[in-house]
Length: 312
Ligand code: GUN
Image 1: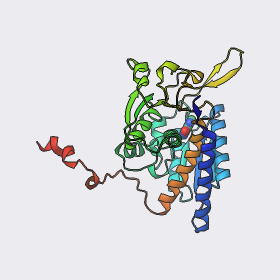
Image 2: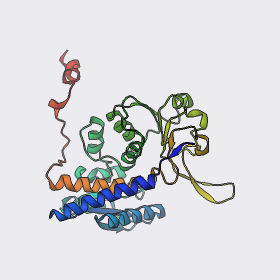
Image 3: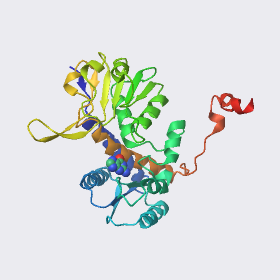
Image 4: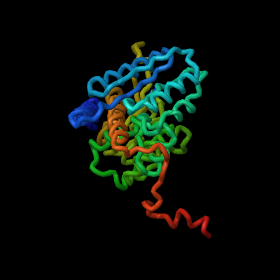
């Protein structure tokens, strides 16, 4: 039987650490970290997510300010609110819940958030920092995946990882994080030739394609570790709806460990958001965060390689 990686327990422990960090900040006379959550419209799923985020703030001692705006809010007035939150020193993190209504350009809105307050890690500056290994704020679900892997492995060096899914908010950032940890990462997707053959060789499979029960038992080598990021609501044989992941869970019991759905990656996302808010607050309060994207060129080991082509 594969071990079950209990995401709820790992998330609870991370929340306890976050709450302890908040207490230590307050005891040191620093302001309490503050998260602004912006919700435009009445999407029911978004209402549930936002409710959970606010509750997570309450239980860890983070101040949360909720901005609920009507569906017909204009892009300009949303941008005005973001500019106000960017300039507000009591707000250390800004989260604009997506999807946004169709008349609003999501990219424009997310790029308007100051990178130092972008606790989702979606801003191109944070994406750039992640892909160059130069710090920044890491997207919550990918960060949660690495924390779950850390419960199984001390070291990821040299391990073969197959990531299924190439989205900007899950597949690509996970690949970048694991490359930083010296794993050998293959990024695949639904159109990949011989996906089962690639998965069969992997020490770790990260399934993030949003394709229910895609990963079958014979795709998984004995002793592999599987992280299932997929979560899709489907109708079961009994007519009731249920949540299923991207992995045929009962077929992969020869794995070393696997995350369940629900109760695996899901609970980690909000806990990582809270941890990111505390990180952002600490960096802002210590003057460490900068909203420019600067690479320390002298710190790069292969400087000559980078410039060799243009110098030829
Ligand atoms: N909608 C669903 N998940 C997320 C998330 O992690 N961040 C934001 N901003 N919106 C979401």
